[in-house]
Length: 480
Image (cartoon, rainbow, N blue to C red; front, side, top):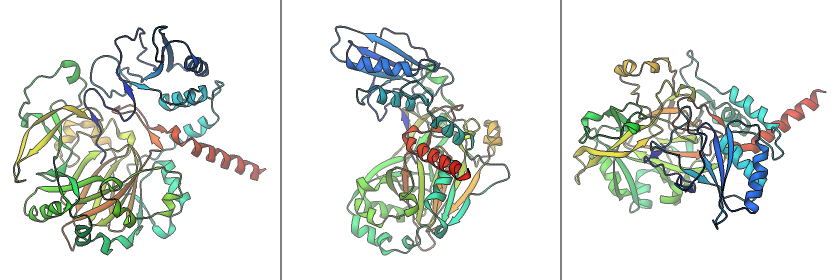
């Protein structure tokens, strides 16, 4: 599962510049604001040309902070930060600014603004004709009806790139049955073979004394629960009386990890390798990972392949990932409980304060004493298995779930930003649960945490809109 932290001063995977005390401009909180800072020059000229393209976009603002003495120049992006926007940082003041790092070109600046502000402007200021296609797609996204309780399925021999793309475009989950049956009994994926190949490899292991991973529990159970935190932080927390509990963590050889799986069996303690990047830690396993022509031939852009290896006792509590996801079972079974992104309000999306178990050297003792100055932005405080939470979180009663069982050799497509809880069970012949998943850049994206923000088409996939437009024009010509 994807873990996204807001360490109260958010750390992003892009070039950031803190809100500068020297910034002499007052920003409109209801705008996506783009600021030119520095002395006049070529970059400022291109900035002004890009600004002209958005002259009638009320949610996009451009400002200049001209300083003739400043040698450096920069274009800074400040996201909208009013009461209706995602609040990725709980600190007071301006959000962190992203620095534009692209070419000195108005065309590229317009594309940058469109991606950040979810607009569809051409460099000449006209609305991009592709905007209507993006909006049509957004209006037709799949939502779980009250009468449906399980994922659609298709046999692997019936899968095509075109069929897969239909489900991606609809943002709808799908089980591909027997997508990778060759992995189930493959020698390369046996525990013994893995020990021989990567037994000495150091891996990062997560450990939970209960089997729950990233679940919520009362803050009062933790040391330091009565310590005060600033009121302006407290009022922006979802469920301030609860914490999102991260598992304990340890680095060990893969062989030691496998040994812990066996010795921990009598207890509720669960050891888990989760979202382990195969390219980074176990690249030799990539040659044995599942291959899907219908996926590689689709328009999705692969980001990372992950290995998941556990004892089959884990429950990944309710969360979402900002990726399109293909999860393939090698050994054991996983049951996914899925909720679509329109349930954000009913699942109480927001900042949840984090805590982390500490574990003693024996691996048997766990302590609740590490309250963290960070929040989770992708988890729900709702325990879907606790009847009391229907009272605690009354909107949850209106959420509709899909329950999807992924057996050995099957693959599940989980669209980006779909909430999911994952219950693992071990294989029948061995106490292990093994899966491989592929994360792809999302076709639909959203700001988070934000209960009211809907998913929008990701303009990094603009070529998909062009392809759909071409098909539509071709169909119109054929009908003449």
